[in-house]
Length: 75
Image 1 (cartoon, rainbow, N blue to C red):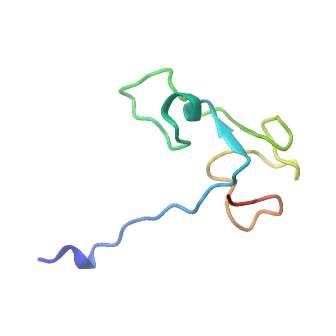
Image 2: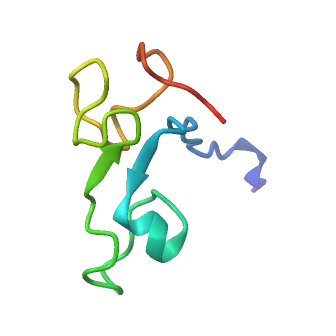
């Protein structure tokens, strides 16, 4: 059977202002496997506000900082 029919989930690019502890350890905002506990604990913040929420007062995280949000910007 061909692998051509298998669809892959492609994540939308995150906002360029989103930051995570994992970025400074692993270079990514993706969730880190349990193999490396304590590295990239899932804490996110916005560079525009330097807080856990964006300029629109909504949470800053991997799921929320997507295209369509008013403060979203790509690289």
